[in-house]
Image 1 (cartoon, rainbow, N blue to C red):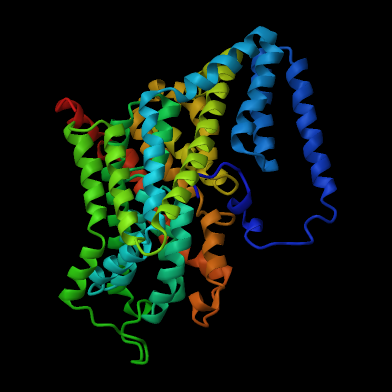
Image 2 (tube, rainbow, N blue to C red):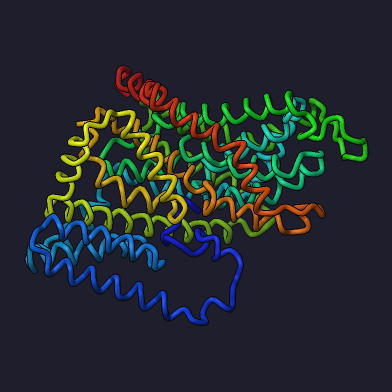
Length: 502
């Protein structure tokens, strides 16, 4: 999952998707090289003649540790502690260890995080995935490319409430790819639709990634969540519009005008209304979260608690015949583990922020960027390129924790709104995870598509995955440019919220 992952590799690495018993043979050479680089960085930190050089080596050590696959929180914290000890000695190191963990996670605004995670876990185990997909398919099936549009809508909704793009992709891939293939969809359209369907989910409230960003950037959680709502909806609408236009321009890609052996299902208005009955709780959760926070009736924490309560009741109802309390207990344990993992990440980010201040690297980075004379547009385009490259190796959280503490001091000089950048960087991080040639989600969907009950006898190659992305990725990149040109799409609702005193 892009949100709850705590490692830089494992399932986030394409090679981790398929066991390879031969990988251990001869693996001592890369390990030896990696160990040598780690040792060289540590020695360099202690022998550095300037704090600035030590700070640069701390960042290098973090990146190397991330490639080794250790937990991201340790990859952030350990080099930071080494850097602080080398520059300021034992008292400063002890002070950081005693103060940083509390400062990182004691903010009241972060109390919404376990609520959102618990809500997502409950909705996942309650069987909401299948119901959401069925409802979206029923309501959009009459349009050209309607099943793909329904898949996009379901993916946006499911990834927003689950907080997991990777988890949603697994679930939606299992259900959506065979349904689209049965309807006569081209295999590239089917897999591409599933890959991009989760992109807007981590922008639409409740978004765990935006809560985490608010913690790193020290911004109010409520406005940050509201900032992602309109861009998230617009991303989903943009992909839906693209599928509609593609369905009109190339109907053969969507099973239209093919031979009549393709399965066709007639959906009645009764079926559509019944599907809404099955997902009645989802719009209720959105009302509690969005309307409650926007109107000022609820604080983000109260809205999260209310949404978690609705999800709890929903899970009890849907799993009433299948040991519901055991299911809820398992969801609670998973939520505690995921929350602890994210809090450890926040502690690591706090330590990174401190070492950047001690070494002067943050100010040096700001001076360097402003000294280049880049405009806001060129700076943000450069970040798009950087994140797409980083997305080949790291998940969204890893990229956020590694880069945001370094970039934050530059925002004022570049006239970048902090709330807007949170939305921009989350979408950019999610986009990096699907970018060829090493995009994580691309390989996950390819792995799912190899199952006979998913591909229905069709051969879906990695080339098909990359070809499908060549159709969809330009749309996502275009939306990033629209965000740069029209930042109001992310700041409009928070500004209205502030005017209302919410």
